[in-house]
Structures are given as C-alpha cells and as structure tokens.
Length: 83
Image (cartoon, rainbow, N blue to C red; front, side):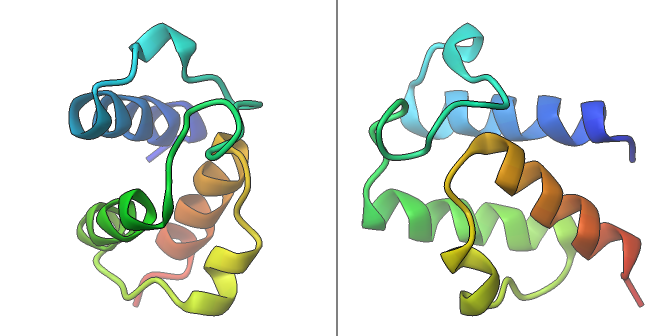
C-alpha cells in the first residue's frame, strides 16, 4: 500500500467515524487541535488502525502521534514490518 493510499484510508476512516469533513483532513492536521479528537476518539482510532495493519498498535508508538502525517508514518512502518 502506498503512502497516498494509507492517507486516503485514514482520511476516509476519520471522516466516517467522527463525522469530520474529509477535505479538512490534511497531512499537517493536528489530531487534537485541528480535528478535535479526544482520548476516547483515540482509542476508537487505534482499534481501526489495528484492523488496517493487522498488528497491535503499541502505546509507545502512539505517544509520538500528533498529526495525520504521524498516523500515516505509523501505519506505513507497521505495514512495512508485517510478518
């Protein structure tokens, strides 16, 4: 899966799950400040990311995630190292 495909999947997922305007979701968008996601939303997002990657998303990895780009990077790295 390419970076753009990952980005589009994440965009679609967030738009559907949290009723966010798809066009407002950009790589530089901050999850909290720009998209108004909270800790409960983050848990829901992690469940979907685990489904997308087929792997458990580690808490340490999540602490580094602040923007959509960070989420794309995380998913890309998980897919690249899939068993």
